[in-house]
Image (cartoon, rainbow, N blue to C red; front, side, top):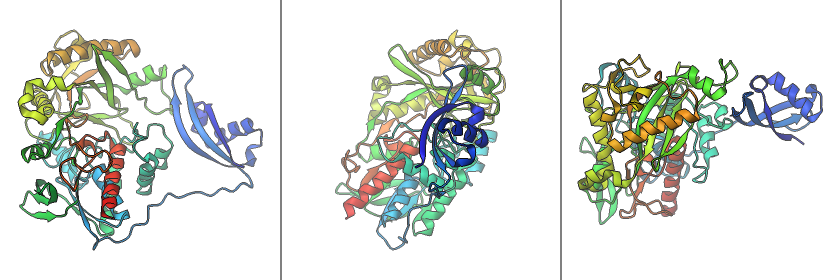
Length: 519
């Protein structure tokens, strides 16, 4: 009978099949020649001690024991070109996985994406990086694949109670992702590999009768007697269906404004806001691995840190080992930062959002905007950063210790942020209470991670799109909007997800709920 083991080994053993087989043979007291196959089920790093270990969960098959390589395959999809139609607004993970699930359930998705296809987006990303030109419909946040496509494709989630995480990961593998994502404790795909997977998902939707329409921005939702009838696009075209999955992402401010204008119930939601901090990856490796040289068998080190400062949570967010900082504005006249890594995470720098949890009371200066108060607060920070940085996509920047000492940095070294930086006292970007929490928080971070608080680290502001500033309330059981029948708020933009996996799960659940109502 195959043997399942939990073990700790050195990075060298974990990285070498022959050494691992030799190690396991001694553990179970058999000759290495008797081991037919070793499957690694889970892998994680334990860096708590100076001698770093790799945690492995393995299953060992000896000669004579039944073993067969399993190939992960897609579900059975049937042609839905003549089936009942469901409108899906947004082709991020929530929208795409909702569309796949609809096809699996025998319904026809009509996916409307305001941005360009995943390849076409690249020209607009270049324009914002090089020419400082922001396309409001095609950028790091908008376009096929959503915000996650060009910001690393991180797949780690704490949302395991929300749904079947393994199913989403296996679907991604079936569409071309490495099977390593099923094994790693903190899996990611990488910005260089995710576009092809997204493209294959879209082609599968079309192959089985779904529609995917790009550069098709929804400008109105047709409602009669509190029931969805369809949508209107920017060209004035009407697309009719009485089931609508709204999966527009956390940055679709025009959709929030549309809902508010039509008096479709929405509410302000707290989010987190702060800066993006960049260190050399070599420094983070030395802190996390307690070594001068990481070596070839360990990946670039990530970090995760949380502190309570003045009654607020301050924490790292969307940490990118071996990554770069990107400009993520969605409209002219604003500056927004985010980070991403290629699949190998082989860049010289590491970056992370360092953010503070906000409260609804923080939005009081914008109370006149009602449910959009948090969004207007967010917008005001981004616009202030744009003015301070010279009204371009350059970003306000400051050395970390200089920031804690309220001192403008004499000069800012070149960072991974391609549009460039402007030396600014960061306290000008944020309200006073946030600046003070950040200053004290970085000092606390430095106590927990010796070497983290350094003037070689550069802060970029703001990191403001951590989650949606608006929630679109829905029934907890049916997922239908509390007021509008046939409207299914979905994913990050509706306030019900926080990343690729949780958004994909939410998209699938909305599709399942629609199918249930149509039975």
